[in-house]
Amino acid sequence: MRGKKPPIRALVFDVFGTVVDWRTSIIREGRILGRRKRLRVDWAAFADAWRAGYRPAMARVRSGDLPWMKIDDLHRRILDGLLKQFSIRGLAEAEIDDLNRAWHRLRPWPDARRGLARLKRHHVIATLSNGNVALLVNMAKYARLPWDTVLCAELFHHYKPDPETYLGAAQLLGFAPAEVMMVAAHKDDLRAAMACGLRTAFVRRPLEYGPDVRIDVAADRAFDYNTDDFLDLSRQLEKAGK
Amino acid sequence: MRGKKPPIRALVFDVFGTVVDWRTSIIREGRILGRRKRLRVDWAAFADAWRAGYRPAMARVRSGDLPWMKIDDLHRRILDGLLKQFSIRGLAEAEIDDLNRAWHRLRPWPDARRGLARLKRHHVIATLSNGNVALLVNMAKYARLPWDTVLCAELFHHYKPDPETYLGAAQLLGFAPAEVMMVAAHKDDLRAAMACGLRTAFVRRPLEYGPDVRIDVAADRAFDYNTDDFLDLSRQLEKAGK
Image (cartoon, rainbow over all chains, first blue to last red; front, side, top):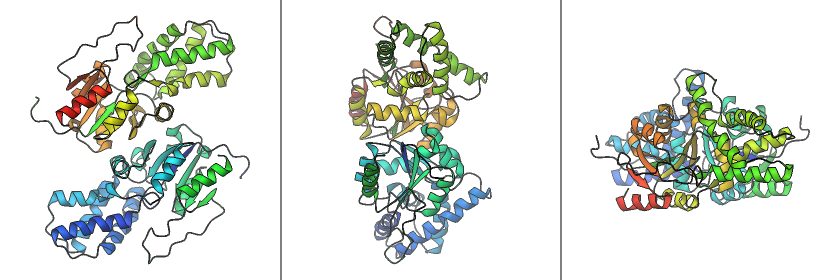
């Protein structure tokens, strides 16, 4: 199955958790809002609950139970439920909308910006995220992420791990799947990309769910690369001459 | 009709002729190939003929006479005809394919890179081109154009001036049409954008078709801005405080 592989021309990146630290970013936005509005909320639990609602919501779109809906709208559906659950009252519509857009203002992991700039020298770098275009473009400006372009579920009306996303990204970039490498902190994302013929790079992000949650960051030889961060990935790719 | 307009949040750019000088770029690529393959070809006439085939080819897609086909494929159809017309023989498939990709390597007008960098400070900047994603991404890397993202006909399966392109770009960027400004050297493109509710900036590119072809670069008050280049556009926008 391995055989001779073509050179890697493009790197496509999962974003939430892989490029940006959604958890501390959402907690921070919550705390700022909480101070301003005098809310007593456990913002860490709030952030975790918001993220926990994300997969089931996408699953409903993937199964056809919900019509196509972008992540901004799924985030908002979940948020409306959380406002009740966490007894958050007194927010105007504009404030709720702004809180929903906290996902447009997520902060990158410390290596991300520099790592991407370095990877960009030799490869096309693009997002391949379940986020929507506006979210990813706004995030890139906010966090100064130097994408060559933004690719995402919204362009295909399919969420990862549907194959349409991985194959669609390769096709839009004009490369064979084996010339494109999926970079992600999530092994299921990588396995789905691999099943479509893409190359894979695992990035360990042990703190994605906070310091108290231990997640599987063990290297897996099924992936082409197992890395500590984007700078490590860059070094490993340069060493392999790819 | 004018009334109070919202601030301009995003600028979307026509590319061929507006950002890049396709004509001298294609002539240059032709001459390099011609020297290597000892071809006697009027490369200026060749470039003009290639470009002249572009609108009729897109019109056939827009009318449904041809199925959806990206510009790389339309360029190749036209090129195959031109090779016969200009009696260009002895090119291997890889050489023909590389010549077709000359459109991925077009050079920017002298103000483009600096102008875009300056416009990017205060606005989302994106392509809105009939070129396909791979072409535009490769061009951006080759010419170091700092797009926030690449939007194009291929994402909508509609070519400009179909309204799906202008409205689709605004929707993906998450802005109302009136918050998005189309920037182009072609008045028909701007008029179609205006009909969809976008703002418009005309950029004079008097040399697009070479020094011997006079084109209409007169200011038109129907457009929000009439400009000499991207730096001028940037200055006018800053002056207007938008």
